[in-house]
Length: 76
Image 1 (cartoon, rainbow, N blue to C red):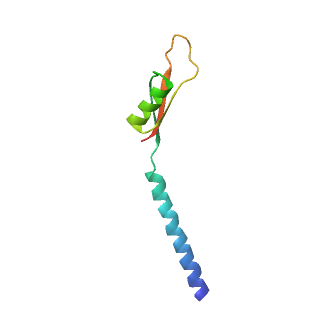
Image 2: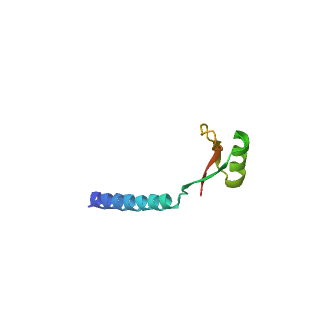
């Protein structure tokens, strides 16, 4: 009888522990992105960090008539 109670207790504990993880996963922030004309790698990095607390990077390869873009990724 004691073994049965112990097994039931462990199953109930695991069930409720699994539910807590679901609540935490739902509350996580998702990734968002913003794009604007790049005015230099350092400026892109600084602007993204100050505006959105994210990480910014200028694109490396663009066609000549298209201005470089600053891509900013942050948690929203």
